Length: 191
Image 1 (tube, rainbow, N blue to C red):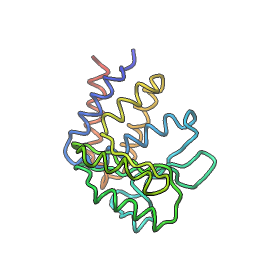
Image 2 (cartoon, rainbow, N blue to C red):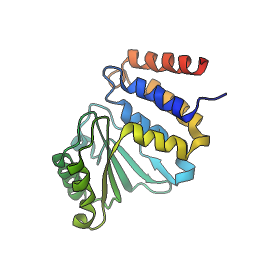
Image 3 (cartoon, helix red, strand yellow):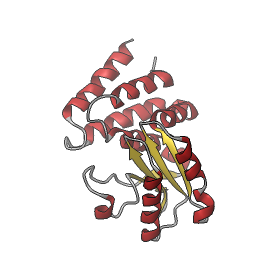
């Protein structure tokens, strides 16, 4: 029997709790989009090198989403392993403004606490920008919702996540993290 959605949430949470796991939230969201691509009508643009700054690559964030038949970014994700601040939001809006892109969503994913004043600030951006939705979500909450919404795709998500983790260069995901995922998955599936 395949792992339950909650079993997968536990497995990914344990993986995120490993040392030097800052690249993993990017891979969690990328795997979700790749698993549900046909259902969403959207796709992930190729991931940029973990160590490259957005200014160097021209990216609007850590992860960029387009419609399947288009290359224009409609949603940008920025991952943080710390609290998201108003300054982070302002910086993201500056990047979007300077790029001239017409995006619909700028989504922050954090593994830390989300403060109420930051949520409220993000909610007020829509009117200020003339239509860009900004939101701050926690990584595990995002994953839990995805796995329950697309319950039948949960194994595809997990396989895609594992593939993305294993394909990352060691500079982004160290060998210990790759081995940890395989061990955690083996243990979870043997129960």
